[in-house]
Structures are given as structure tokens and as C-alpha cells.
Image (cartoon, rainbow, N blue to C red; front, side):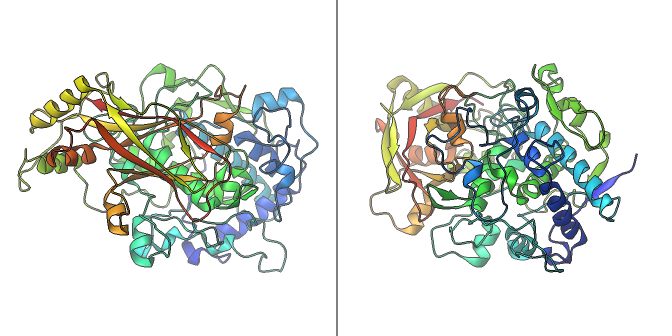
Length: 539
């Protein structure tokens, strides 16, 4: 079997001088020339991930407006007909797996099928028969330089003067001004930004050692996501999916207004943008690197065999390909490798050791190796929750005081008092439950114990993390696959609870939580957080 090598899109400066990108542009253009109902068309493949072209879908905008495909501005010119038969739509379209432990294997098969179609088209155009999808490693480059989108995607024409199919009009970036980059810590440290940025997008998930579950190294719900069926129902996104995946989607997409935001920001338009596949190629590469570091995928038959509804992809010149996670869980069973497979060369962060030092239970000079615990953690206990839905206003922020239950509060204090290298403290999680709305192109930033009129340094110190609302509209749709449950997010707040304990603030009966919409453009459409809750999880 021929082996193909997926290379870094930033080779040759990330320009159209990179042959992989130039041929990608030509292959995409040929796929775009086909009709919507052709399984070999760009549009059909985009609809496999998700679509707003069938007005009978519950998530289709009513009244019709963007993100419906007929309202996409500029390039590409997106068709809305002819639709394939309903049976074909049911079989192939709207398959994307999010908030599920199938997120990684489903997308691997999706990339594999698209790559095969592109390669066939590229060969037919006289291109190389060993072409493979490039990847965009936004964590790479000196001083994080490769966090910028490769220039091949920002020029409107190819070297011969013909239109560049990689160029997209509705792609605005994290500052909503057309400057497309991913705000990684390295990028922010070296470039700085006029608006508040904290290097939200990280590869911290690569330090996890459990695919599903939690231990001292892995926060819930695990690297690859929680156990689930085919069409998830508002389950929390896995650590890899939440960050970097979701945040990259929303930041690259960006937003001008409720009716004008980036294609990448919504699952029903994301795969119309050619940068989508390079982003997912990097996610796939990171999964392969994570496995290469000795981390195992699930051995559970429910994961290996996939859900009852099977994953299926069109393939060039052959019957559709039906596959399971077991078929794609290792690159050794497939026909491609990555140019870069080494784990990032940087000091490993021992989060539990940091906590024990902060709690006074460990000397900073002591060596500590956290024991690996079972993938199925002990039952979590609700520590507290707010009383009702939280509305993220048009000004872009909201504050809630999470009331603590007295008995659970005592358990928290006891766990931290007894913390030692042999009696590990509980982990603490903040949940944003049942987040509903219609504006996927939104990032929410969360803070703990933020004082009034806090300056920028204090904001940074009290910053818990960010969540991208990728998939919000579809998850909120009545009669949709999610049953209007919305999205649910989990953030590890262990170090913040530790700090409250050390500062003798856990005797209070509440913890202050602030949620704000990132960026300068706040969505006019309301965003509702059904509940803000805090849990303790015995390790």
C-alpha cells in the first residue's frame, strides 16, 4: 500500500509556492465545479459535516438568513440546489460527531475520504499521485509565528491569475478585522494585542493520559470526550475538542454581526472553508502524537465498534466506505503519516504537584509522581449552583454568585486540609450547563473571584479559561438531535478553589463567577447559560 506524507502547510512560507497548497487549491476548485447533489462535490462533502441548505431541518434559520447557505457572501459562491434525495441526505449528511468520544475517529475518516477525492482530482489535472492533505500547526514556528493562517489562504488569485479557491470572504479572525491568527500563548507573548487576549488556545490537553475519564493528570471528561451514542445530546466536549478545536473554529471565523460571521464558526458552514480541513488535519496529527507518547484509546467494544448508526463516506470511483473507530484508531492501519510526529519539546506541567505546593503539602524541591487512577472516577458531588438561568447581555458579560451547600462545602475544606502526596486533594470543576442561543461565533471567558473594577493584570490572574460556542445553534434547536439541550462545558477550577482555601475565603457561602463574551463585537442574539454549577471530584 502506498504511503502518503501529510506535510506542514507552512513549508515554503505557507504560500502558493508550497506545491501541496497550490495543488490543494486546484483540487478544491475542481470539486467546487460539481453540483451539490454529486457525492464528489465540495458542497456534498461540506454537508457531510453539517449544512444549512435543507430548510426542513430544525436548525435552519427561520426566517431564512445567514448561516443558511444561500446567504453566504462573496467567495465561495455556494449552491443551494439540486438537493440529493432524502435517503441520500439521511445516509451521508449531518454526520459530524461533537461532544462525544467518537469526535476524533469520525473526523479522521472524514479527512481520509476527502483526501482520496482530492487526490483523484489532482491526478486528473496532471498533479502528483502522492499528494496528501497538509496540516496547519498553529502551535509551531519561531515565537509561535505559524499561529497565523498560511498566506495561501488570504490571496484572492493563483499565480496564473485565476481565482484562488482557498480564499474565503467570510473569515474574520479573533479581532474581527480580517487578520486571521490563532491566539496561542506563544503568539500573544511575541505579538501582543490591542484587545484583551490571554493566549486562550493551548495544547495543554496533550498532557492528559486518559482518553475518557479523569485522574491527577486528566481533567474531566478526558482527552477524547465522554462516552456517548452517535448523535450526542449536549454532552461536554472532550479536552482536545474544547481546546484547541472549538476555539480555533470560532477565532478563525470571527464575527461582524449576527448576520455576518465566519464560515468556520458554525458546524453547518465550517467545511465550506478550505482551512477547515487543515485545522482538522492538525487535530488528527495531535491525536497520533498523543498515542505515540504511550496514551491508549478506549478498549471498550462500544467505542471500537462505533455507534449503532454507522459512519459512512463516499469514495472516488467505488462504493461508499463504512468504518468504525477500530478501523481508524491507528495510523499504522491507514496509508498516511505526518511530517511532524514528535511531541512538543517543553517541560511537562505537573499540575497536581503545583497544587500540593500551593496547599503547603509538598516542598517545591520535592519530586512527585501522581498515581494513575481508574478511568471511571469516583462519583462527583455537587458543591453548589446558581438559582436560575444566566443571561449574557448585549454588553457581553454577566456575574453570578454560586451558592455553596454546607455539607459539600465541609467536604471540600476537609479534602484540602488533608491534602498530601499520598492523599490527593479533590479536583474541582465549574460547569456551564445547557448553554443555548443562535450565535456560534462567540467565545465566553470565565473568571473566579474577580473583584469589581479589576485591572487587566487581575483579570489575567483570575482567568479560568475560554469556551467556544461552536455548534450552539444546532444544539439549541427545538426538535433537533440535541433536543434543545444546548451545550455544556467543564472547566477545571482546582487551583482557584485551592487559592480561596489558602486565603480563608471558603468559609463564605458562595463563589463569585464572571462570564463575559470575548472580543469587541457582542452578539445581539441572547445567550443563556441554564445553570452555573461547581462539583468536587475525588481523585
